[in-house]
Amino acid sequence: YVKAVPKPDRPIVWGHIILAVKKDSFMPVWEKYFDEKGRLMRLMNFKKIKNFGTKTIPSVMELIPQNKKGHKTVIEYLKADFNIPIDDSIFTLRNLRKE
Image (cartoon, rainbow, N blue to C red; front, side):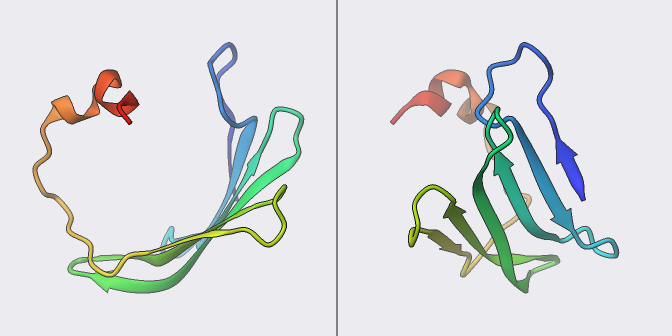
C-alpha cells in the first residue's frame, strides 16, 4: 500500500489517499480517498487490465462516492494513445480552470 499525505499548509481536497498496487507490476488495484477528518469519501477500483500498444493499464476505472449510496461513475478506455506531443501552455492554471 501507498499512503499519500499532503504537505502541511497546502490547499487540499483530500486529507490523505491510500493506494493498493500490485507489487510485481505496480498496477493500481484501488484507491481510497479520505477527508481531513479521516472519513472514507470515495473508492476508486481499477479493472480489466488491457494492452494499449506498448502500455498495459486498467481499461476500467470505477469511482464510488461513499456518501451517495447507489451512485458510481465508470470510465472505460476503448483506445489509448501515449507519448503524443502536447503543448505546455495547455497546463497553465488559467487553462485548467476554464469550464
